[in-house]
Image 1 (cartoon, rainbow, N blue to C red):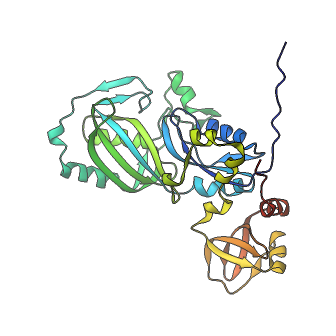
Image 2 (image 1 turned 90 degrees about the vertical axis):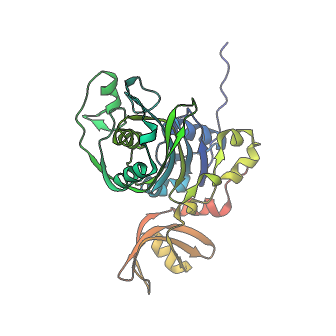
Image 3 (image 1 turned 120 degrees about the vertical axis):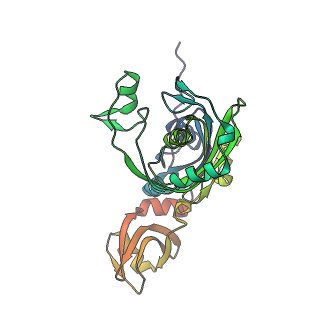
Amino acid sequence: MTATRTRVQRRPVHGVVLLDKPLGLSSNDALQKVKWLLRAEKAGHTGTLDPLATGVLPLCFGAATKFSQLQLDAPKTYIAIARLGQTTTTADAEGEVLRERAVDLPAITPEVLAQVRARFTGPIQQVPPMYSALKKDGKALYEYARAGIEIERPARDVTIHALDIVLCQDADGRDALQLTVTCSKGTYIRTLAEDVGEALGCGAHLRSLRRTDTGGIGVDRCITLDALIAMPEAERMHVVQPADCLLHAHTRITLDARESGRFLTGLRRRGDWPDAEAVAIYGDEPRALLGVGHITSGELIPDRLLSPLEIQQILEGTPRA
């Protein structure tokens, strides 16, 4: 006989889980596991982390999904370990070794590392790796790569805001570099590691990658998946942060009840406000996040709004069990 599957009773959950994504799990797999644990109705993540990467992955639920793009666009910080002397087909540990070269450690002086750091700091161009999810004629580049087809990829502009490079050894005791990188969206750390290796004349490929910060959210604020699984179900909702934890860099504005109602219909409001590109708007009684917008010439213009139902559910509190 076929066992009867128990249907999960979904519920409205509005907020953000700051997850320390584990090794070997895709971002979507991590999202689906946490969504199941919370029995949430709607969920989305804020930018993918490769299965071989760990670290900060904000997961958005309900109304918070309206602000996920803000984290997609935010600067991110990584700590990467790149093995020197080997290049691979994928630019990371999953690929086959393409070429091996000797590593002349005495030649990699602090002065040389400083020169390389300067070369790769600021606005740079990167050629996306073939083993990536970028699309060409509706197919991901990695599909072409697996079929042995090389596709020409135009270089893309990215920005390395900060870069630190030090010599180290990887987990296997091989000569390596530790790269601490703060970068713009769209930066491939695999490609950066590979390019730095080429600049040093010996090649390199990525062995490990950890995201330590995204948009001001540090890994010290995150919870592991194992810890979330181990919690009693009634306690898991306490891990869910308010949606405005994604809006810490926004200017705060509070509207009275009358103005709040009009704003929620999409109407622009006028006031004695300085221009601001990113504004989080709240109602005052009761205090509740209404949405985000921007201010131009004293006019508050809505960009993303919560629905009255979402606001009501947030004020009432998501069920704890």
